[in-house]
Image (tube, rainbow over all chains, first blue to last red; front, top):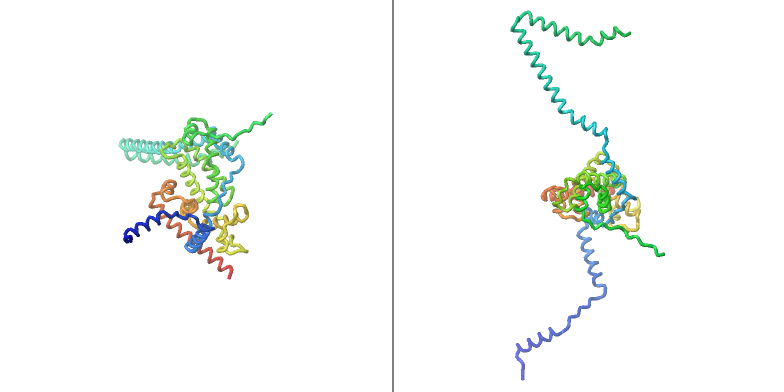
Length: 157
Length: 205
């Protein structure tokens, strides 16, 4: 009895499915493929900067630690923890700079205001006379201050 | 009598636990953290600095800075990330300080026996110390020509294989800034390599 084309096809498919897969690979097949892959990669990375990066990337890292390095660090840390009175003193001095400067400015402003106030009071009392007196006294004061050091020189004994 | 074998002490506490203990006052526990990270930090530092004393200085600075900032570690991110951020920032600072006093020029690294192109093709064996030193010297000389930011990005991305996201986390820059920096870094490096090659060609001819 002759088989129909459909039946032949089905039989062939069944036969094909029953055939075991041959999973054996040719000898050194992976090596051969990898050689081609490397060749291709070399072609792709032929530019100098790519080659440089590849070179730098493949350099073995050096993670060598000097002998007892951790002890050295711990010694530094312990040193940091011990209080240094001089460092503390200098830190405090630096911190005091800004407030001192502020106080100085306030004192200067206050003294300027005071002297101007006194000057106005005096000026209202007797304008012409007081004005001359103030200028005189200020110039005398200035002269005394400027020449104070020279006065001391005379009394060297 | 049998000799008792002393096994190396392994601390099973996590980094975060150790940080808590150190912050609590047991300063000696910080040594364990140093032991865990020192080899990696040395490996990283040697990618940025050729001089061994510079490497030791920067590693010492990193650990000292880490200790001083331990109070500010919140524990929201792994300690390793936080520590790496301090490390990379310290490398950047140290590179900037060193920028003013360059030690080597391109001409110092021209090899008599072998052209630069040939040398790039030969990655030295792990056992050959001298070859490795020369190779490192070459890499440093080229990378010294790029800016500090570019060097940081190149080292993190190209040499250490970190992603843009990781670099952004480590450096504190945005991802888009990292991308821009990476692009500029490649450009700077390409220019440095070309300068190197043209100089070598001039010397040969």
